[in-house]
Length: 202
Length: 202
Image (cartoon, rainbow over all chains, first blue to last red; front, side, top):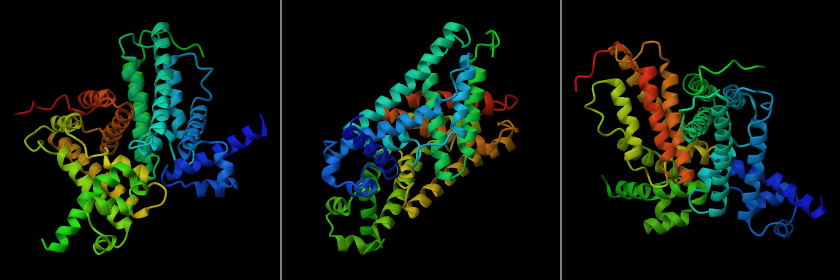
């Protein structure tokens, strides 16, 4: 990595929690200058605009959140068990400072800021595609009921998690998120798991 | 209503969609001056601070959203049918400009802005209390399974609705919200309705 690229990455990683905590309007270039110790010109050498920096910062925050949430899943052969562990990761894994970057940035970029909006949409589509792939693999392998609608199930998982996180944030209590996780767990067992599937090998 | 009170109400009603669409930081006093045609001094005669105005604007937006969502429910005697109609209102009733004020303001006020944060929490508690009351009444009347946890069920309904609204907003499609409504509907039938309860009279 060149020195310029290293500086660019450092700016992104230091701006990301600020944008995620304060929002696009609430995080000024002055805040980012203070955090990085760089002059405005030093920042704009690496980014065309505040919008571009915010978009890169969102991608960085989202990638970090994703990699934490998808850790420890590789060794789970049964698709329903894998989804259940994925969901369980939400109660135990720490989130990015300021809470879920998708939730924050979706609300923040909804009026104006089309660049940021497009990144949020791409992030959501990537999330949905990942869940859909597991569901499709499970249908093929016989672990998941063939009649489920994979789009619907992936939307319900994501919506349930985001809704639970929102309530937990307002209440400053883990309980609503825990209730949402339990509900999704029960839902996967009752509506998604193929009861005729062979037991997991692990 | 005195002339002063009328002006105060007009400022609130004109500031509310601006705050809800642009966020607290993204909505300047200049924006509110332009919308109301008032000078800064004319606005601050009625509100101690921008924070106070934003808090009143949130309450106004929330009350409007609530009154739309709880319309047309008085005549439904069965508690599960009432909750199902309440949920169905989410697909057909128009929302406040900028989307759900609770979702927006929760994210917006999360870091800093304790006055606004407290209003959001109060709004959520009011919503939960309303749903809990229906569930409790239903348990008493025998229309709802006595073993349900009323806190849990009300959290799941709210989280499911908010999560579905968030996804629909990102996707600019009604589909994720529709999926969430269908899921909540099925959940109320399968897990909440008391199967031994007498059929609804209406």
